[in-house]
Amino acid sequence: MLVVIGVFLLFRATSDPDFGWHLKYGEYFFNNHKILRENIFSYTFSDYKWDNSYWGAEVVMYVLYKYASPIGLSLILSALLSASFVGILQKLNVKDFVKILTAILFFLFVNSGETSVRPFLFSTIFLLFLIYILIYKPKFELLLPVLFVIWANTHADFTLGLVIYAIRTMYLLIILVKNKELNLKSFFSVVTIPLISLFSTLINPYGFGLWKVLTNETDYLKFSYIIEWGTFDSQKTSALSKGTTLIMLSVILAGAAISYILDKKRFGWWYLVSVAFFFVFSFKSIYFMRIVATLGIFGVIFSGNYIFSNLFRINDRFSKIVGIFTTVFCLMFFAISGQIFAENLHFAQNIESWSQQQKLPYKAITYIKQNPVKGNVFNNYDWGGFLIWQLPQYKTFIDGRMTAWKVGNTRILDDYIKITKDPKTNAALFNDYVKKYNITFVLDKKNSNLIRYLKKQQWSVIYEDNIASVVTLTNSSNIE
Image (cartoon, rainbow, N blue to C red; front, side, top):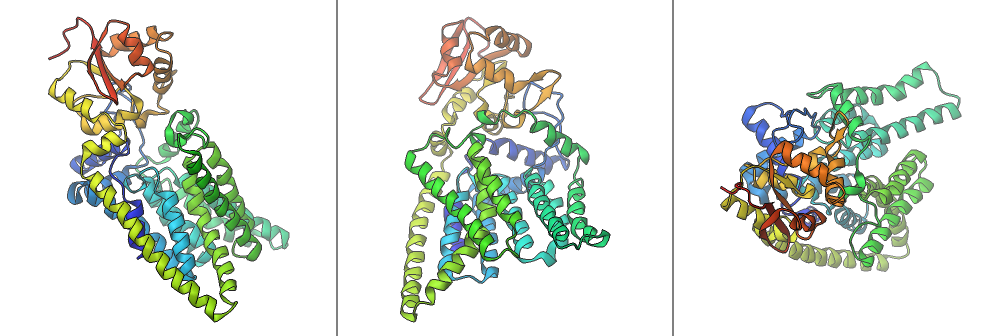
């Protein structure tokens, strides 16, 4: 029942804007039997070669999309994550009430951001198994190099996994020093598998080039501009929603602290430090909230089980009451999550509906398909992946792949931000791009700074709805 509840809560439509380019990379590999490194989707930086760490996940996603449909893709991946977590729960042998509460907490936390249709679903599963092995099954540590090989070819979060592993390795070395047991043999017994795991990440189609790309891409990322990398305070959600998230984060941090106090051997300070580290960074970037939830849920499980196990000892009658409550609660949440799933399933079957809800330019794209425009499009950054998927006949100016791409002294995102934030001041920069790349029309959010500015210039609106505007140069012959 918990697995099904997980599927119900995790299921989402394929509405993540970046899903489009992930799908197209998977499609390219499927059709050409080789990994796509060249930039064939945008007209800017056309000679750029990108070492894409997501390629493994993209192939899986495309195959599922092709043979199981978009809905089947989300269902299967949701079931994979749900079953992985519940399977680990079963191995921990905890009270049913604790299983239900922690599972629901975990599913609620990771269901944001269309987890079930994004490569970091695989990363979440790998992180679950990494922490499970480090805490409960250290004898299986020999499997971690294999885990990191797969992880490095699936999602860039393998670097965060290595950070956690490094903290734990440092902890073990300090313990050896403290106990005066550090020698050459004990040193290598601690660091050998972590080092092999580190070097195993070089087993990828790009070798060391993958690390070079990841280093470059984290050097100057405009994280604050990307929604999922925005700060906690910057999120356009209600105070109640933010308060609930803060409470859930606090429960996770408290669970890690209590677990450390109760069992320092199993939950060493490395675990508490890791949870606290990502807890702090989750306020700088909401991207890390999923990491906190995945890492910290083990502490919540352990501490929750300890608390409830002691409560159950009060008397048998209390235990029976809790058992009845557990059953009723599980059935009620099963019904509630089933209703949520039914609504999401109905929503996912209609691309126009979820495009409207996600404020993606489905209708504007339909208009462009019916009324083709010659030349290139200057598009909104958030819509780039969607255009690659839904409007492949036009290449993008920018999309989600290109956040940190740099050629010479030019970063495409820097120029994009300048143009869209203050188009009047940066008019010369925009005009240079227009001339260089034959940009004849702009697809952007209705009433954006750029659209409002262009309406006052030699640009005319050829399409507009409550989400998007399409403007083209006045008196030009670019409409076919």
